[in-house]
Image (cartoon, rainbow, N blue to C red; front, side, top):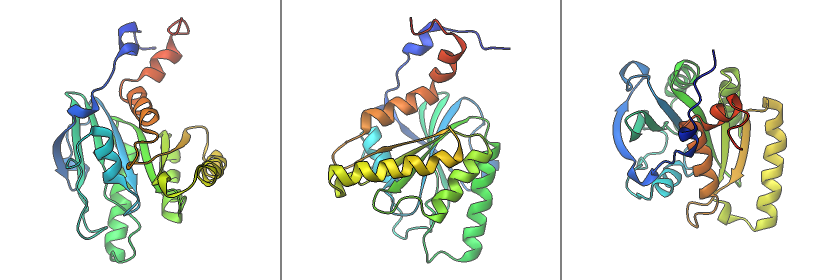
Length: 222
């Protein structure tokens, strides 16, 4: 049965500057109740995940980077409202992390992506100079298996000139076609704020289910 359409919901906006730390969790069993909507941020260690979250929220101290990359294995939840959350997943792919810890991370992340009912989408961050590593493709593969939308954020775009950055984006978009039509990508710079409006628009659509509402009512945009 289709959801009841409420035109007011399509006008809903989110004040990302009101984002506040909610809690940390070591695994799904001690995460916040699986209700409402949430979007998770994932990426290799040093891909710029914390900087992106801080730029999005206008709070440079909200998401903190571990002194030892790859060591912090907690999932951090941030509240946007009573039923909307951002989730900061542990960084992956750091070479010095023990194999046992990597396997444990893989197990928890696969479970989170496939079982978390409130998860509406995954923001996957990649350094634009080193996109689509094996670990990145594994993350996209997990999400694709769970039919989870993925939006790739090619971070540190200010490190490249406009032409090479555009070329890299097109290459990543072409590669993502192999994972289905639930994947999108954009360039992003935490330093300059480039790509911030596009990121906020994507998050708002996911967190307010605007894309679902529009699809269910063909007259919604008229």
